[in-house]
Length: 477
Ligand SMILES: [Zn+2]
Image 1: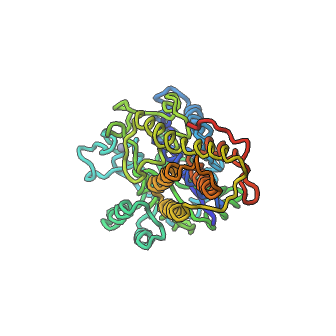
Image 2: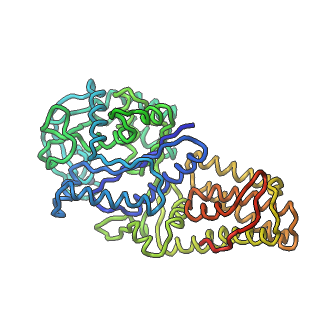
C-alpha cells in the first residue's frame, strides 16, 4: 500500500506550543507505523501567509519576512528535537507553494467569480461572520470586536458541491474519525446555511503580504484557500516534477491529521475545492482533540501556554514525551501536567517496560547460548494482543492500541514470575521471552525511536537464532 500522511500547517504568528507538538508527534507515530510495511510520504509544514501574521510582525516591530523566517525555525527545529520523520516540510511563502496555488486556481477557474463582500471580520479567525451569527459583533472564539468590512472579493462556488460532499461523507468515501465529528459535519451540511466562500482579501488590508490573485494585484488569496493547497504543492504539484503528487496523492491513501477546530475547512471546503479542480478528495480525516492545562484551553491571555522547549528543559526526554502523548485519549480533550508525565515515566516506562527488557536481558545472559526463535508459549495471548493493536491503530485509537501492548508487557513480567524462569532456563521459556520481546520492541519503536532502536540494535538475529552475546545491560529510562 501507499500512503500520504499529513499534519495541518500551523500559523507562524507565534512560537509553537505543546498542542502543535502533539499533532506532529501523533502523525509521526502513524507515519512510522505505516512506513514499516508500506510506501509512505509524510508531509508537514507551516502556514506563513495571512493577515494575522502580517499584524503580528508589525506588532513585534519586525519585517514580515524576517518574522516568518524566525518563527518558521522555531517550528522546524522540532523535527530533530523530537525525531519527527517528515519527508517534506513546506512553507507557504515559498515559490514552490505559489506555483501550486496558481495551478490550482486555474483548475477551479469556472467556479471563481467576483462580487462585493460586506461582513464582519475577525482577524484572529481569518474569517467573516454574519451579523446574526454573533452577539454584539464580538468574535465568539476570540472575544474581540469584529471589524465591519466592505470590499471586492473573489468568490468560490462552494455551494455547488455541498450535496456531493454530503454523500461522500455519508458513504465514508471521505471517512472522518471520530464518528462524532462526522455527525457534526453532516449536521452543518443539513442546515444548508453555508454560502459561497470569499477567497481573496484586499491587498492593503493584508499589508501586501500573501499570494496575489492571478492577473489582479489588488487582492491576495484568502489564507485558508492557499493553505489547504499545501497538501498538493508539498508533493510538487504545479512544479515541473509532479511524480510525488501522482504517486502519493492519486495512487495513495490520503490521511489528514488535524485538530478539532478546523474540521469544517478540511471536510467541506477542501473537498469542494478538489472536486472543482477535478482532483481526488482525501480518504481519511483524523481529528484529534486538545490539550488543556488545569481544565482550560492554552491561551496567552490566561498565561498558561507550555511550549515544547519547556518539556525538554524539565528533564523530559523526547522519547518519553512522545510515548506519553500516545497514551492520551486522541478523541477527547486531556489535561497536561508535569507530574503525570513523570509518573508515566516512572511507572509504565521504567517499572514495567524498562524493567522487563532488563530482566529478559539478564536471563539471556544467564542462559548463555544462542536462542532459537521458534517456541512461543504465549502465542495465543501474543496474537490476540497484536491483532487488537492493529485493529485500534487502523481506527487511529492510538491510546487503546498501546494500552493493549502494555498488557502484553505486564503479561510477560508475570510469565517470568510465575514460571520462575531464573530457575528454569528451558529453551522454550527463553525462546518465548525472545519472541515476545521482539514484538514489543517493534511496536514501541514507533513511539520511542531513539531509545528502542538502541535496544533493538543490540539484538542480533541470524537465521532463526538470536545471537546471545554482548547484550548491554543498561537502564533505558
Ligand atoms: Zn475570532
